[in-house]
Length: 155
Image 1 (cartoon, rainbow, N blue to C red):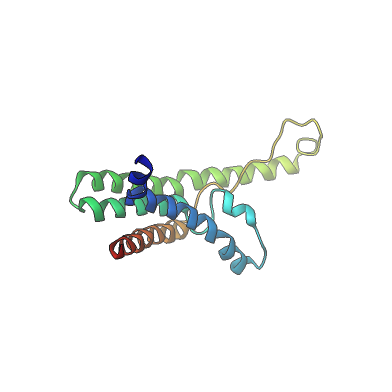
Image 2: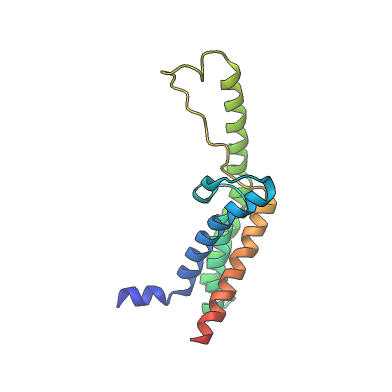
């Protein structure tokens, strides 16, 4: 019974589908843009589109569709969406930029990153998103909810 209830929870299903789909399409988008495969993008943060943005906007849209865009639930989801997207394009993006600079410094200082027993581990640079990646992720998330809602109307 509980599994069936979860399967009828449009906001949850929409958000999960948006995350998975956004992560999946990062790989072919990267291939088209850079002419090389990077399958790791499907399992990492950063890249086009933002799966975080897709998830939260899909969640907010589905809540708005189900509970009304005037509902408190939609208001909460919309604010959480805004904060998440602001963070992805702001703080997390800048943390990735800082990681890039630290990696460059470590590589330029003899002995830090070249030693086998070094404590230095290269930092992940792909943490946040460009504003365009956040925007595309947000539009993608909205579309996922609208499409899933339309499909549910058929059944």
